[in-house]
Image 1 (tube, one colour):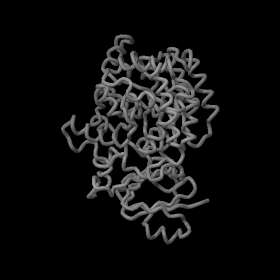
Image 2 (cartoon, one colour):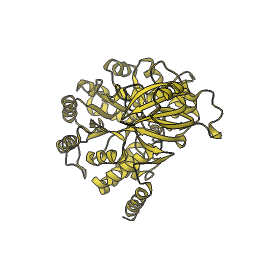
Image 3 (cartoon, rainbow, N blue to C red):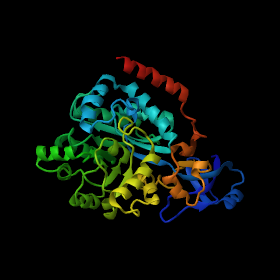
Image 4 (cartoon, one colour):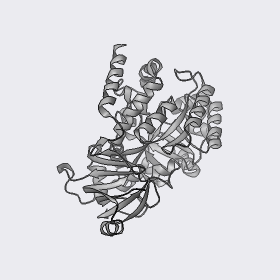
Length: 436
């Protein structure tokens, strides 16, 4: 197998307890990391390895987008500056009913993959219809994805009802299981779109297949109030009674939480996805990160969809998470640069059930690596490369990306996606959407 030495100026492995390393290197052997050590030592030990010089750059693990609706890149900007339920019911759902199809999802997911690669994202925890389309898009783009068996209780152009969604999700899982780049989730959409019976079916499916669950929960105050009226308890209590909460659950948004709910999340080992920019844009509120951190809840980061964010930009989420937590608590020590980076790497890998393989640059783990250039005027001088990644650098400074040892972004250009051809396809489809 071919060996490649990545030779950055700085190395941030995200290994617990390890800070920024100067003049270190990473040896990739096949799809995994074979060695991490001082540059001079690895150059001497592996003289036959191909060398990739990364001057002025910091090498970090691939970023994990823990919540996205990839195909909704095709709805970016169609309905801005409106509340969530208005946005869903009067804008998004009608458009989805008219347009969403296998090929529509495939095209939008490839667009999301291209944006993600240029943002340092190597793994996408997706939630959308037509899972076979997302699976194909991820494989064709060379990105990792957790593909969802997405379920809501009403019919769409994809499925007629909950049992049909589940059957189609299982069929997609059976078709693609074993693909190295793909994981799968059992994905009830939200408490306001899924019945108790369907929640239990999806809980049992996750246990049977030994996969994670993925669900929007407590995103808005209205959702909590309506849930209380409909069921007599807040949505979290309802789902707890149904046995939904465990280390399998990836709970998205979780903006409106009381102390008892935070304690429950900690006790059950639930992973909470903070989506700061989408929640700000939809005026849904802000996840209580300080209280969650104090309770040792595993908090991670996601972009949400491009129709509500409107960027699939994990560097933007990392920065917003760090700044928001400080601003709303008056405590500058909350959500440090290290914490924010962990939320997008090693913590997220744990949430996805992939902590042994992903999330840090350590020997034996998969070689998902991102180099970020800090040598431009806006990134200089560099006193603390980790803090520079959070408070200064942006996705435009991502230069190279490797996934499983394969270079999928070279000097900001995807190697797996024909971007001009993709843009032409997107332009054609959006033109037809606008004309209808």
